[in-house]
Amino acid sequence: MRWLAAVLILAFAGCGGGDDQLVVSAAASLTNPLTACSGDNIKLAFGGSDDLAAQIRQGVKPDVYAAANVKLPDQLASEGRVEKPVVFATNELIIAVPNDSEIGAIEDLANPGVKLAVGAESVPVGAYTHDVLSRLPVGQEEKILANVRSEEPDVKGVVGKLTQNAADAGFVYRTDLVDDLKAVTLPQDLQPVVEYGAAVVKPSDNAQGYLDGLTDGPCAEALHKAGFGKP
Amino acid sequence: MRRAWFGIATAVALTAALAFLTLPIVAIFVDSPPADLIAALGEQGALDALWLSLKTTAAALAIIVVVGTPAAYLLATRRFRARALVITLVELPLVLPPAVAGIALLAAIGPSLTFTTGAVVVALTFVASPFYLRQAQAAFASVDHSWLEASRTLGASEARTFARVAIPTAAPGLVAGGALALGRALGEFGATLMFAGSLQGVTQTAPLAIYQRFSTDFDAALALSAVLVAVSGAILLTAKLFGGWDAADSR
Image 1 (tube, each protein chain N blue to C red):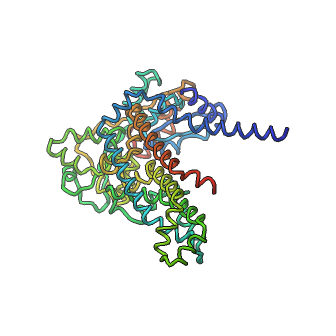
Image 2 (image 1 turned 30 degrees about the vertical axis):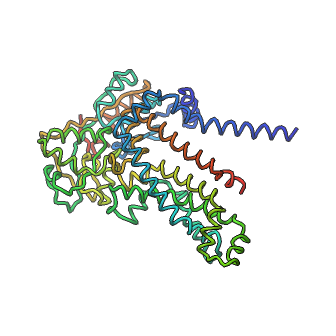
Image 3 (image 1 turned 180 degrees about the horizontal axis):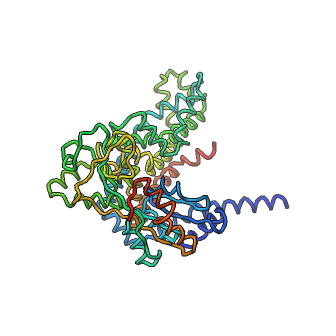
């Protein structure tokens, strides 16, 4: 059935612009900075990092893949599907709560009746969340997990449940905070290393140039402005 | 000559449509070995999702039929002011993107129901009911008016005429509408995710479970998709066996 995919991809690729157009698959959390810094000849496709990786495994070939972790690009590289990945940004996992919330620390999430929205374990934000929770004392972890009301397929789902007042708290990246929400920071020893990795999928000068620009250039600046840390 | 040309063109169009619509579905079964299918069904999360999908779809369909049948009867048999407007309004969810449906439900009902199975049923009912209303209205409209008149002339009450004459006569169309609504409810994704959330056994229906597995376990996603295709196909076939499709066709 792969030939069907090939036919469809070729058919739709023909709808694109000129030869120098670059297709970049990027994590949804990079939407704002990358949109701001990328030129007209760059086509950005945002989605969950894991979905984008799954697409690459199914044969969809963007020029560059920028993920919200290093695990996925590393896996793809070891499978020979992308070039050697580079770390281009860092982020911070926080607990987002409504501005008037009384939740002030991670321990408060174990209180009965707290409604918690988290990312599904299959997406990076969910994996980091479960990683943090697993390092809490056993009883506490179980109490917090029992308060989970939804496992969202991406960060935006978690933020949406919070801004709609459906959930009382959720784990998101610092860069995902919006006006109605405030951050409860995690203790230093619980904070996971959140690194963003990118790799060239289809080697070309343009693709390599875009990748270099993520660590040094307008895109690096846009990332910094949006709250991402430097690697 | 001209006629032959047109005949060939329509045949080519149908072949293209058939190939485009069936190949992806065939691919689901070709790409998922039977062993994987069975293994996927043995996984608790997949079973929970399928069971939740069946429960919530059945609940939504019950609400849709109980409320929708008399409502469609009224729309089909009475002429009143703003009737066209009412019909347009009840059909509106048909053309709404699921994300809009989810936002609309959040705006109207608010977050109190979110994260509950009830919210899933509300979302399914909202997106699926227009399919039933539309079909049921057409079915009632095509019931010969003289039959209803005769029933009333013979002394049957309005309610009795509805229950004993209109419903049995319109039954094939009603079944077809029910099947369409059921299929739509079974496949609902966006509105459920936005309005209800996604949690195993509570709000994670089969389409949400498929999406969650898409990234981590493509084979499991394929297998669960295959099961959903089989269930949906069985529903469509049932409706056809009832003769509902042909009745809808001849209209």
